[in-house]
Length: 251
Image 1 (cartoon, rainbow, N blue to C red):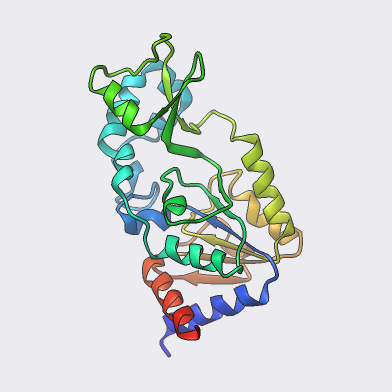
Image 2 (image 1 turned 90 degrees about the horizontal axis):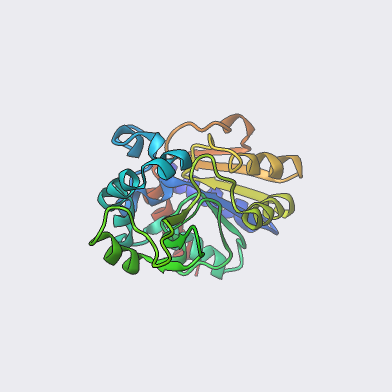
C-alpha cells in the first residue's frame, strides 16, 4: 500500500471512530476547481493587492473592486466541484460528518450537494443594496455591470457583494454555528486552510480544548500544525480521490 493510500486509510479510520466530526475548509479545497487560493505562490494575493478586500477600499472605490471581481473573482460561477467537495458530500450522506464550516465564498460545496454548510465569509453569488436591502443574484448584477462600473440599485444605493470584507464583522449566526460544531465534535478536520485567518483559525483550538482530536490536511504548513494530533501533508485532490476509492472498495 502506498503512503498516500495508508494516509487515506488512516483518515477513514479516524472519521469512523468519531461519533461527531466537524470539518473546516479553506481556499486550498477549491484550487483543483480552477479557483486560486490567496497566500501560496501564484495565489490571488500575488496578482492583486489584499487591500482590494478591505471594506474601506470598497466604499472609497467600488469600481476598482468590481473591475477585479469581473476579471477574477466572480468567474468562479463556472467552476465545478472537485474530488474534495464530492468526498465531503459522500461522508455527509454516510452520516460520518455533519457540519461543514467553510472560509470559501465560491458555493462549490453546496453545488456538490452538501447540507449544513456554514459560510463564514459569505458568498460571491449574491449581492445586496446597502440602502434598501434588495437582493441581486449574479446574473442580475452582471447585467447592471454591463451598463456601469459602479452598480447601484433603483433606489440609488450602492450594491455590495455578500462577502465579508476585511474590516467587517463575520455573520453572527455563522460564528455561533461554527463554535457549536467545534465544541461538540470528537474529531475536527481542517482541510485546505492556512489556518492563519481568525476567527476561522480559532475553531480547531476550540475543538481541541473541548477534548476533540484535530487533523489537518493541507499541502503546506499551517499556523496550527503544532496543535494537530494528525498531520496529512498531501495534495488535496489526489488524496481525496484516494479516500473516495477506498470508500468505494469498502461498499
